[in-house]
Every structure is written in structure tokens, then in C-alpha cells.
Image 1 (cartoon, chains in turn green, blue):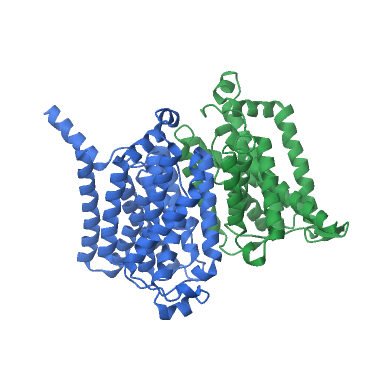
Image 2: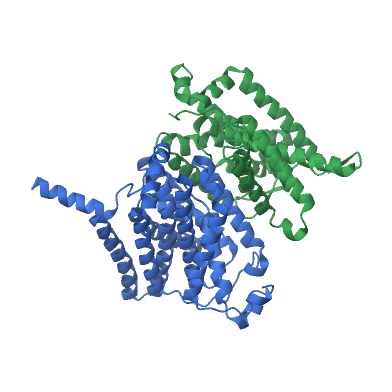
Length: 296
Length: 342
């Protein structure tokens, strides 16, 4: 029983974090059909903001809020530097500019801060553990689950009930038509980047809360997770991103529990093989989104 | 077709000039830079055979380079050194020791086989999904190199490769690869693939089996990357898996994209240009580090400048310097235009 609870908590907390990451990526992809390679760096930005403000004596929550704000700012900056100038040109051009921007941010962190890991201030609650039905689990896992439930619900509400959300969904379905009907395109895109940055910032706190330190390359793993989750789930569908995130977490956790120590090193390779199998079965991902029109 | 011969001739001349030029100058540093340039050329042109013709960005190329480098290493490290260099190597491989040129071929074959096996299902994907899976594939290849200690010495540095790559060998391989890339471009597969790059639906309607075509190009690209990896391995003689990851991927993609991914000329031009820029910036970085003692090391400046250059090129000239015509084509056209106007 304890084992089952442990397993479920692991899957849900990992899946929640994965789902939020994937969601942040798909929001951009859904509207612009563009992949943001610099997404992982938003997590890095949140982490370094925490590190840089750690000596300021501010309450932790305020530092955390500042970190999320910085992630939002850099999210919008990504749009202005890497997307807006080349949006109309070609898919490859945008992939490359966002890849270059990701590199730019990472190397700026290397140059101006340090290549070595830096400690991030965390409240005590992140390192405590609790026992639920005999299963001992870190409190941060429960925080992650709670945060992901709240945020997923909030995003669902935003997308379904608010004007902004409906406009974003309209833009994702048919950008040209939405524009003709009076949806302000640039505002929608900026909001999408802001929302994406917000999700990255929150995930950044949860993610860095697990490791406690930040390095320039910290964004790679979350980025990869988000990538795979979106490809499994279906690149154009928000529910798909969430399903993909949880499925990926299920696969990862199961492998963690079942693989021997020798094989565990190769976990990523096994995960990826499973992804290939899923794609063989469903090349479009598990959930098909709306057919997307042109980007401009 | 005539302009294709002209292109091949010009590009081979460029390679020859680099090789002979650095030799004539007789400075060892230049010789090293030039050899490095030619090895990069092999890798970038290899990537061009897939990316340029299919229009899909592939991040996995450097992973295949790594597989090539390790394959060649395992096959060529002298038997008496293997105990030290690769203590956990499988028994039956401990006695294997073949000539580096043969190993280079084997490296290409291994990389191509791995590519053929893993990439087949991926070639059905288009657009972003294809790019993302190639990125994931790079991570997987890296994970394998980093953890298969028996063959790669794990994340530690592997040493003891015989140093067999010199300027002439690098130049010959680079020349051959350029010709192969041009031949592939003009082959039936290459032409159909480029048709699918321009319009996937139309090409499929004409009966082009796009996944199959992409698969062929991917295997060829991996083969060239494997050979390039072996070439590099026998030049550098000791390396660790981290030599085959994002930093290097960024560099070769920058080279290809700034030069122009659609043309072999672009691949060559980008490699030459970025190698010079890279070496210049590295020199500057080194000078800054030597000057500013104690103030901390300057790291990452080179990459920052390259990233800015890449963004700038994409904004101004999204196709790169040679977006769609090979150099031979451009020259014959201008000559013809002059003749008609005269």
C-alpha cells in the first residue's frame, strides 16, 4: 500500500511539473506553430533571479514572485529578439533564431555569473518530508502537485472563459481569420509569450526546488521533457500537452522503479524508445488539435 | 548540369587552397586550424546532405559524429594500450586492431546503421515534431556515449588513438564529401527530396515516398558524420563524450545556416567564414583572459557573438549567404547575362 501511494505521488508530482512545462511550450506552438528553443532558459532566468536576490533579505515569496516576473519578461523578450523579426520568413529561421537566443542566454550566464552551480535560497518546507499512509515523501512533491492542479485549472479557465483565452484559441485555430475578425495579433502573441514565461517561471521554482542549485545549462532537461511530452501528447492541443506530461512522468517513474542500477543510467534512451513506439502508432501524437492555418 | 562540374571544381579548389596555403605558410598553428576547418567541412557538408535537401533541421548529426569517433577508437587503439584506455572492454574486442583508414570506413558504416535503425520511424514526422525528435535523439546518443563505459570509458576522456589524420587526408576526405554531396543533390533521390521540401503535399501527390527519401538522406548524412568523427578522433587523439553535444551542434548548425543550408556552396562558405570568426574570437577571448588576471575568466563570449551573428543573418538573409544557387550556377548565369547584354 505504502509503495502504491509512493508511486502515485511520484507520478503526480513529476507529471504535474512536466505537464506545466509542456503547456508553456504548446501555448506558443499552438498559436504561432513555432518551437521555442529558449524555453528552458526561462527556467534558468528564474533560478538566477533567485540566486541574485538571495542576499537581499527579501521574504522568500517575494523573491519567488520576482523570479516569475523575470521569467515573464524574458519570455516576452524572446518574442522580440528571436520570433518577431523572422516570424514571417520560415519555420527553420525561427527554430534557428530561438536556438541562437537560447545559446545567447546560456553563455551570458556563463560570462556574467559563473559556470559553476550557484545555490538558490529555498524555504525549509522544501526539504521536509511527511509520511502519508506509510509512504515517506518530500513536502515539495505535494507542493508541486497542488501548484500544478491550481495552475492547470487556472489555465483551463483562462482559455475557456476569458476573452483573452478565447482570442488566443481563435488565433491558434485560424490566425488569419481571427485577425480579420478584429483580434489584435501582436497583443495575443505577447500574451501567449507572457503566459508561457509565467508557466516556465513557476515550473522553474518547483524544478530548482528539487536540486537546490542553478547552472547555465539547467534548462536543458526541462526543455527536453516539454518537447517529448508535447510530441507524445500532440503538438497542437493543450490537453494533449497535459496528457503527454503525465504519460511521460508515468513512463519515467515506472522505469525508475523497475530498471536495475546498471540500466537506470540509460533511462533517457529507454524513454525515447517508448516515444518512438508511440509515434509509430500515432505520428500526430495522442490528441489531435485544431487544424492550424498560416502564421501571419 | 555543366554548372555542377564548375561548382565541384571551385569548391575543390577552395579546399586545395586552404590545404596548400596553410602548408606553404608553414606555421603549425595555421596548419592545425586549417585541418580543423577541413574536418568541420566534412561534418557541415554531411549535415547539408540531409538538411539542405529535406528542409528539416537535424540536431542529431553530432551524435553520429561521436559514434563514428568511438567506433574508430575502439577499432584502432593498439592492443597493448587497450587494457589501460578501456579497462572494461569486452574480451573479444581487446585483440582487434585495424588500420585507421579501414576504421574510418567502419565508423561511417556504424553511424549509418544506427541512423538507419533509429531514424526510420522519425522520418514520417514533419515540421517541429521532426526537429524536436532529432533533438531528443541527440540527447539519447549522448546518454549512450556517456554511460556505455565498456566501449567509451564513460564520461572520462578516452585516449590512445593513433594520430593518423593530417592535412592531406583531411583535404582528400573533404573533397570526396563535397563531390558526394553534389552528386546526391543532383540524384533522383535528392531532386525528389527537394521537391518535397518545397511542397510536401504536391510531391507526395506525384508519388514521392517522402519518409523513404528522407531516410536515405539521413543515412547518408550519418555516414558522413561517422567518417568525420573518425577523422576528428584521429586528429585530436583523446576526447570525452561532451565533445559531441550541444556546443558543437550549435557550431556546425551556425556554419551551415549562415552559409546557406540549401547549397553545398553555402556549407563550404559558412564553414570557412565561421572558422575564421571563431578562431579570431577565441584569440580575443584568450587575450582578454591573459590581460585581466584575477578578474575571472572570460568564457562564452565567442558563443554570444556567434549567436548574435546567427540571429542577424536570419533577419537579413534567412536563406544564408548562398540561399539557393551553387557557385557554379551563379557564375554561369552572370556570364550568360554579360554575353546577352554585350
